[in-house]
Length: 102
Image (cartoon, rainbow, N blue to C red; front, side, top):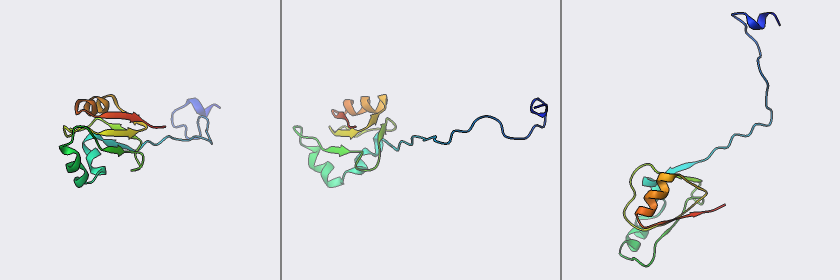
């Protein structure tokens, strides 16, 4: 115990947590949302105002949408587990909807 409080102490310090589970959340930016949908689909819904394409982010392997970049001014329905505040604002400005999925 004497060496613990002196300079040059080298050894194990602290406690260990054997069952630590780190939560890894895959994210996608708002500017890359349209890459999950084909170009043909985007052009199909471009002129229609009564319908909007549904982009399921969970199916693509992501769970959070972040607000980096610009979104095309076209209505879209985005399904995801988590949304950042900026992402929600940008999707709603474009006329879209954010749908939370468990």
